[in-house]
Image (cartoon, rainbow, N blue to C red; front, side):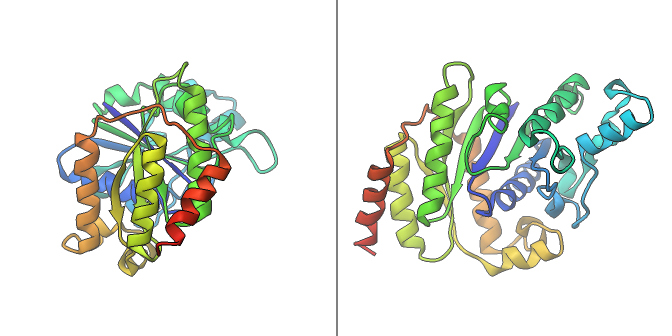
Length: 280
């Protein structure tokens, strides 16, 4: 079973990448589960026609309120079938102002483990869509506990995107001695000047000791289908954008270059970016 995590700056398109990959993997006949690790519970909406599924923690709290506990949970309560039979789970989070959202993610994953979800569904791929610009103590839990084995950083060519990815790399490196999680590559989710973005991210990936695994060009079609709660792979299967996600899925399946990253100092990151700005 491949356990893949998508990390990156907030708003960079992690859920778009994760959900399109899930459908692309499922098209190959693989059994896929996507776990949204964000209290907003919107990771899987493009797999469910826009329907916001009940979260694990929300369902768990409802049981507690009627005097039950997590042993009364069933997989049918928290796992929902989406596009191409992708299994959809949303971890949810604590009530506003109470508790750590990252800890909530771990609780949700532990409930899935206790219910033996991975074995019962005979999963080939588990996709974690993880909230956060920085791998804080809470959101490091999928890494710390060994759930997120292969980590892909979604970036654009914007400097703050690289800054966030570099910080996440620091977290991966810090936890490498106690967890099997490794950096598997960088994914470009283009915002504009694709050639500039490709060049700067290829250089950044090399600095990390990793690779730019694929560049997804900007496409208004992707956002158009998301309004309808669909992935581009499902909504426009013959489009160029859909083909890019299928290509990315192929590259991930054949990838085995997993590394402990070598994050750079802020000054070096700034200089790398300035150098490519001068060539734009």
